[in-house]
Image 1 (tube, one colour):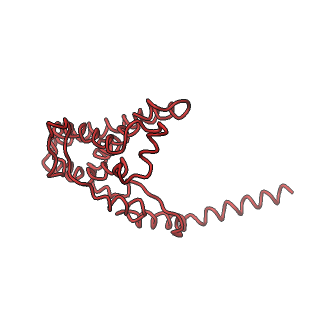
Image 2 (cartoon, rainbow, N blue to C red):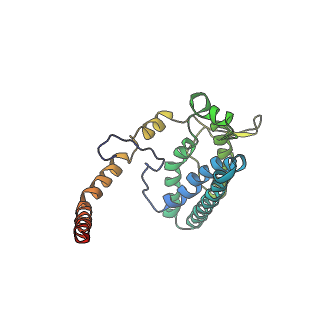
Image 3 (cartoon, rainbow, N blue to C red):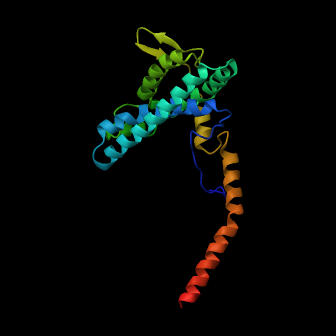
Length: 212
C-alpha cells in the first residue's frame, strides 16, 4: 500500500473539517449504510444474515447519535448552524455515491440481485435513501445542496439532480481528496515505528538464543 502497488477505496477519503462532520457522517453516511444493509438482513441466511443484523444495529446507533448531535447544534448559535450546513454540503453527494454506480453502469448490481444477495438495485436503494433524508433535513432545518431536488407527485418520490460519477471513479481509483494524505500519514507511521519492530525482533532473537 505504501509503495503504491495496492489501491484502497473508501467513502471516508473526504476531509472532516469541523465537529459537525461527526454528526453528518452519522446521519447521512451511516444512514446510507443502513438503507443498503437492511435488505441484506432480510434476504440472507446463516452466519452472514446474523452478522448483518448486528452490523445494522451498530449503524443505527451511529445514525441516531449523529442526528441528535445535529439537532442540538441546530438549536445553538448561528455559527453552529452554519457549521452543520457546511458539513451537509460536503457529505450529501458522497452519501448518494455509497450505493454504487447507476444500474445501467454497475457490473455487480444485477448479478447480486439474481443471486439474491441484494433485494433492491443500487438506484432503488438510492431513491429510498433520498426519500427518507429529505423530511429529516426539513426537520433539522438544513438545506440539501441540490437545486433540482423536488417532489414528483406522479412518481411518488423525490427527484434529485445528476451525480458526478467521475468523482466516484476517482475515489475508488485511489485519487480521492484525502488519499495521498492518508498514504503519507501511513508511510510516516511505518517509518517512525521501525525502531519498535527492530527492537521486538532483536528481543525475540535474544530469547531464542537463550532458549537454546
